[in-house]
Length: 237
Figure (tube, rainbow, N blue to C red):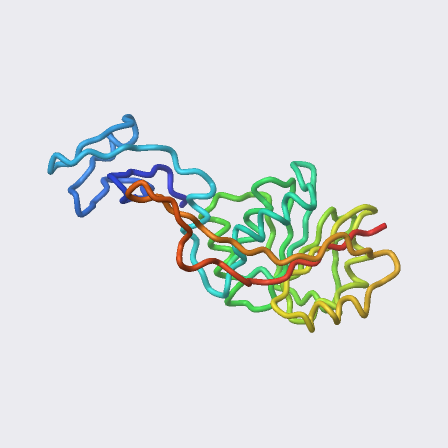
């Protein structure tokens, strides 16, 4: 079951699904959470209440393997232009962060995960997020792709070069193949094995640095989110 409301007191957030909410600031009754935008606990502490969005629930999913970060997911969505009419194949599901993000805005998502344990984690996450347009298959992508006329294929795999021919035959004309890998040798292997109908449209690494404001001073955080992976964008022409 996904979270429905978020109760906030100062900078503390409490996620609510159902029933009375027990916090270190006291107990808030379910009937108050459902009907009010401001509530007071039994210890007279006040909370603001607002609807939990998809992204709020996404941040709370169960995690198994390393997840793709929002900075990379966002670029995939913008670069490929997927929308409510798009059919997408995601390979290397992991915990399902990317697949869930794609399913939230596209018509249909199919995701392949050969490791049964990870597939179970992802399946539960999709159910908790309330996603009905996503299908997870316990399948090895290296053996081939069943689906055709795909608008986007994403690969988060050790050897993406072994999937290039499968991807080319399954993509619709103008469809995108996005490869997410951590090392340059993996990228080089892909570039050395490109098929004639797959053309590189972009090759990037995204770095993210947060800034903070305190005591009237604006300055960058001491640590930044650096290298997480390379993004190689290919298009079928």
